[in-house]
Length: 270
Image (cartoon, rainbow, N blue to C red; front, side):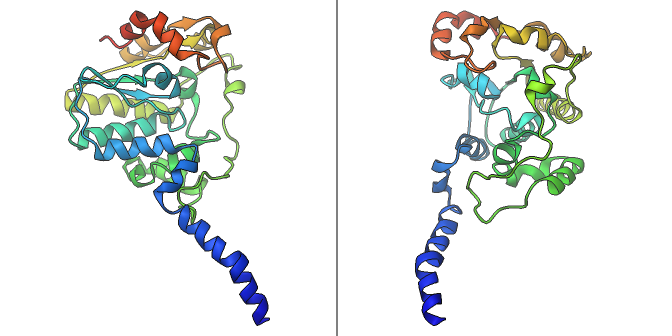
């Protein structure tokens, strides 16, 4: 029995301890597909960004504006899975830090707004990276998170294999006759607008350029009275669907930027 224990510890115990230790230190994020979100949350919380206009948003926004980091505009777009609650937390971190900006542009694909923190990657791209900021959410969201997602894992920085029960499916949602912004996203959109008003920050919401086959989906959204949403749905820019690699992202964003630079700049104008 003694020899068995020695053998087990030697060949299994020590490697297991090493694995646990490795995935509890930030360097392991280089093996995590959500590393960009962790970096974003950290940089926003600790950095001092001085610019005229901040861009928050999803990976489609990132495709077209990731190189825009200057005194006029600064892109912090990363991923759609943290939805508007995540963008609200980023905004709170920005205004509570030493960052200095006068305008905020929220650039999101409309279909994302139908979700309710119930996507396949909500846990990996929102709950885990934003763990230390979640307490700034309303109690209803905290209750939902606590009853839906695992508590902090031993392998803290490992990309989890947690499966979201009854995850939202954008393909199924896009087939509905009528589409609506979810209650949770609408709540945090209003919080973003309110926080901007409190801090004297000009706010606008725009869609990134989308494949033309998204047009009829966008037109199925129920109309709302908020000014920023009227403009948001009315002025969507579309390109030929054949140029999309997955129905949302452009297959050659760099080429699109070269050909449509004035159009992309116009989307940022107030």
